[in-house]
Image (cartoon, rainbow, N blue to C red; front, side, top):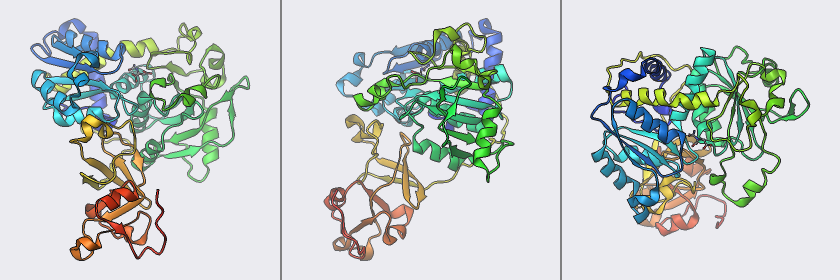
Length: 472
Ligand code: NCD
């Protein structure tokens, strides 16, 4: 097995064994930095940053320079043809013909998937809106491994903006792959989205328990624990006694606390920002005095704002500048492997707990679009050529997951391409939770975003329903 010519868009693209291979090459390279100058000589990396960045862009570019390769870059969307309304697909095809590898950061969720689908060269997602940021996760895991040797069985508290933090979303799936337990500590209103919890429990086999009794820190301050994910490899998984599990989990203390800033640029309205005043949990020296945090590494993808006090910087448990520094060897290893510049064989190690269900794929060029307004497939320049593409992750209730942004939703109305008797006059649509809807085969399914959507396409309401249609 090899990573050559592959893309890294989400954490699904790397197995446990492949991540371990990236870490061991990163280790080898950081011990011999000066000897890497011929590794990627003659290769060109395009770095397309359509959103602000310091660490990610500079560490990618530094990595390519240290490998002896060259870099071409766009660091401001206003200076590229995107400002003239060019689509991502066209940008990807063109840049793919200039460079051997593309690194892309974009504010739209799923943008990196589109670039990967249209460019002929490997594509690395350097952050796509609030969706994922897999290379930051590699730096985070590499740090955990260096400091704690084995990630399996560790208890990691994720802190702050768990709703829009893309580093959080990638880290959740990676920690599950490594068999760690996760404590979710969100700022109120910024809890982990349901689609992530659903994917975590359906595809990684563990359990998520919501915490009902409020927790307190040693000095009585509230500890914002909202839920706990227990890996199936955890020795404490006592399915019948979830409350005991959570209590046991906390008594043992936390191995790392991963702090994030509020991702204000992604908040949907001003209210979301206002609500945070005085409520966003802060990590400072006082909090870290608690017994629960005695051995906790303090991690942060940076940049920080107010959520992580400067008084923690001198503490030996603080890891954030090490995480940032490790970005260069990690990205050197990843670029080398995706370019196939070194012959690295990867052991086909089993993932600890990935179930990889084979969900049917739904694809249509009409009917419901992804309801997530941040999704790339809803944007004017992209909707012209991207079809609605979803995975059918559940039939009851019917739940679809967008293949671009991975947002999950339950459509209200459905129809079948295999309509009764094949006559246009009998094209019927039904409520998604009706008896008729359940009879539709996945390959014949059509989902509609509204009654109007169904009726504009010539469908009339199923007469067998027995319930009145409700106009939205
Ligand atoms: C993060 C990002 O861009 O998502 N930064 C980074 O890449 N190190 C985190 C953030 O911006 O809060």
